[in-house]
Amino acid sequence: MDGRRQSFFRSIRVRMAVLYTVVVFGLGALVVGAINFTISRSLDADAVTADLQIRRVSSEPGAAVWLDSVSLETVEQLANAEALSQLRKLSLITLGVLLPASLVAGWYIAGRVLRPVDEIVLAAEEIQASDLSRRIRMVGPNDELKHLADNFDAMLDRVEDGVDEQRRFIQDVSHELRNPLATMSMNLDIVLGDEDASTDSFRATAEVLRRSLDRTSLTVDGLMRFARRELPEGGATPVDLGALAREALTELAVPAEKRHLEFGQLGDGGPKVRADREALRSAIGNLAGNAVRLAPEGSTVTCGAGAVNGWAWVGIRDEGPGILESDHRFVFQRDWGRDRSRLHGEQRAGLGLSIVRQVAEAGGGTVTLSSLPAVGSSFVIWLPLAAGADPGALTVDGIHPVEDPLFELGALN
Image (cartoon, rainbow, N blue to C red; front, side, top):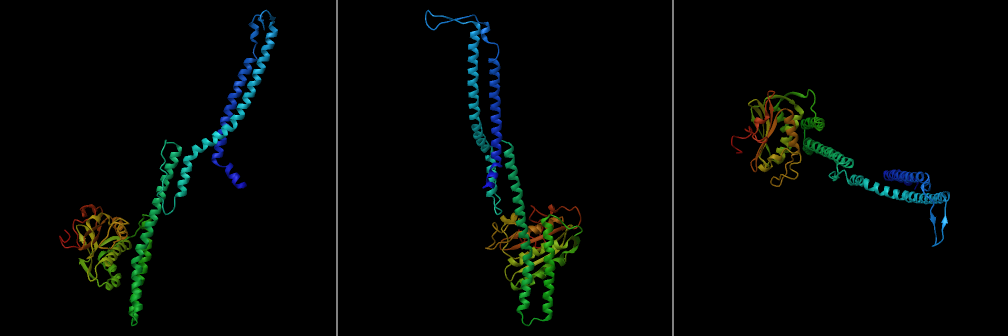
């Protein structure tokens, strides 16, 4: 109980009400005191009878009383004393009424002044970690309280952006770890399900698992860099794009075999470029994983690498359901596939594709898409062979390539 009483008396509204009361009552007392002082000085001055002649005062016709100047002054002093006495009583009554009235008025005014603050508090109480869309959006004069509400809304915008970024990062992690974990799981299932498996089979599976584990560890490090929007210092090394593409498909050999997919090879083997090998390996793995997952059983998944007009390219082509042209501009957005693109009953996750674009742009290049429903899709990563090359020259509109090396000329036109 004592704690509540202390909390009440320490509240800002009580303090503001007391402040208003002190100010209003103090000003009232000052005004009343000034009036009393002025009137008292005026009545205590020289009597007005000093300039009067003796007057005759009669109470009835024919009767007269003669007063001298001294008697008149005495009467005047008595009247002044009575007037001052009544003035002081009225002043005390006025001050007695003013004190509680100013306290009530101060409490009401403080409540009105603090009402916007109550709205801010209510909004803060309604905000949940799962829904940060609530805002105050205060309307009214551009005063300090509106500035407070606007700054609070701006802070919520930053918090919401941070939570969304954290959520996207978690999605990135889960997406990037899915492929290597699935590869390890399927390889283990196959070798453990084979009662006649030889030592060489176990060793081959162990090597695949070792590579997958190493890649998983590097993937986590890479995701941390992407979350901080950083690139490792000195991370660029000579990379054979053709070998990197073949390595990505090799790790997907088991799921491809289960779906009776064939791997094809295009290009001249691929040039070497300076790039972050593990980030680029992760990007190619994303493209290959999507292709193996979406390609129809018995179809072909083709990888390739090469060089065209000062640009190195590496890409993956599938014969899957393809992507509607109206969805092409959405494919590299993080959440594409969850609610926008439906491919013959399937959804293609765009989270990995956003990472592919980030890797390509970090290397000074870009990624292009060629796709039609029921024909297939081709994703190509382009990296410059020389500094200063403009990736805008590779595309028609920032997405579709001027020339797609993984498709025969006119196949998708």
